[in-house]
Image 1 (cartoon, each protein chain N blue to C red):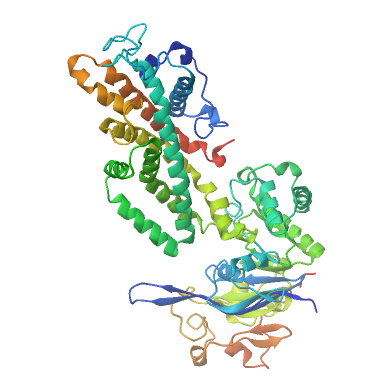
Image 2: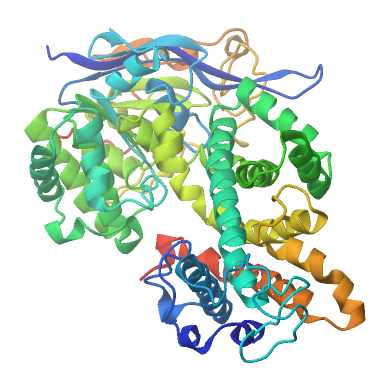
Length: 298
Length: 339
């Protein structure tokens, strides 16, 4: 509901999104409610992100696009901030950045985590020991704190933020992949694959990993929701994202003084955007478990 | 004489169990020798827990044997280098017990059959397609099964896919690990016929692992009887069924129903249960359960002693008196040799 408020009416009737995560095609009855709502929400965000690349009502960085602190009205749907910059344009432009960071960080964490987890789970031995002990050291730190520390250490910049968020999210993928592979490496189809001519690495990555994607994919959406929240937290704290970039967290931070003095719209709309995207990913994760398994397809 | 396509000598598999100063040894496979010739079916029988499947897995090094040598088509099999072991699988293949779990659930029948052709034989796509069609026909499936996933097939169809997959590379020997035990009786016969037909056509050697004596009688040329990791009797199927020598074989055969009216036979009973294979002393494995046991049985593990042409048993009591009258379990008509 909050998102529909936020979106112009042209995108409201958007069809089910294309290319949103793993394709939900061929599922009985079109999937659960949470899956459909999650996909629809995510679709709106994707549309907003795509639209903002070519068009926003005002330049999201333009100072004095309207009167400073003007409340939402017909010409500035989400109002303007202290410098008269259009909040709606900023929220739209920030969608691209926040969603882009999220997708990139999740994809990176998934790939690297699945790879290392498969290595650890299939080959066990020394590789497993080294990987798991390193992981345990990393996991001893609170994740947000760790992310902040590393971002401070490597310096600001979008790619650094992506790398750090992927790094911090990686352990869970690694554990999931390792557990799945470990439980399946003795299965007969893994042995049969050896007989069919697969070298061990091909058994691991060609047979075991593809059969372990369910939990990994289900976790991507949980992880994505978390990345959305941490990205905006970092933005809010002014860590990582360069100042001046339209980013939801930093927008909330810039507008927070207005909350007590009556200019609620500067923080509220980016806040709702964060909330909506995180919710979309959580809902998606709820429904995703069934989608990846061909045994449940018709 | 036809070539030996699979042989093992002194095959052993021990597992160390227990922890922290309480190490014990579980003997899963204890000094097994076997041979399979081209075009021959050798049955390995024994009850659950006797180590039959471990033998199968040791033979192809899916489980690393503790000791012993395996040869496939005369060449010794070694675990390393991995590439060399993979190459051995062109000559020795395996059909697994449970076709539900031995086929990758995410692969279509076509992909499952094409995989060994691609990896072992490096066939091009077009040749692969032709071979896949051939294989599907050979095992009695239709080409419209090619695009199905394993879960869309029946148990019998899945096992046919498993067999086709094993035969895809034209191996010299196939290890069949209870290939029919998870199937309906009606399907079982079809699969056995299929295996026999393929064997005639391709002169493949089979090591047929089973606990089903009716199946053994039907398919096997020779039979190896396994008890607690070791072979206690071996010989031509007809001879073993007609005149089982080892008390364990006699008990096993007398426990199986005779499918003929009016044939009665004495029952031969062992007492107790199959013991735990942990820390076995050096004595006859059957010593606590055998009604014929003498003190000598507890002194050393009896070796296999010839009792007839190609027939040997590991029982000092039964093999020490060559003049003893044959004392089979009475079903004299049993054991018509196959072929």
